View (cartoon, rainbow, N blue to C red):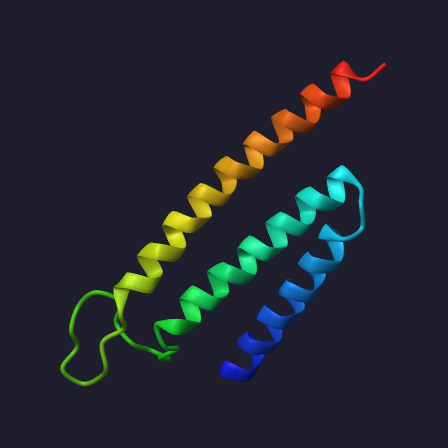
Amino acid sequence: MELIIAIAIGALTAAGIYRLLAGSRLDLLAGILLLSQAANLIVFASGGLLHGAAPLLHDATGPLADPLPQALVLTAIVIGFGILAFLLILLQRDSDNRP
């Protein structure tokens, strides 16, 4: 499972950097979005990938998952959507002001 997450992080990071370097404004937006998702996966994977672990309640038969990375990722997703909406508005205002 860790190998699949690591490959996904690498692919998202590579695609995000490629989109950032493409030059178009929409490519810039897509690159920022992909890099933010890669960062979310990094934070999520840092908490440890435990299969079948209880997220909040301690189960006597199994390990306990760390809820802090999950909370950080949820917060980062909300912030990412806010930044995406802000950048979309900036792109729209810029396209309206062009001759």
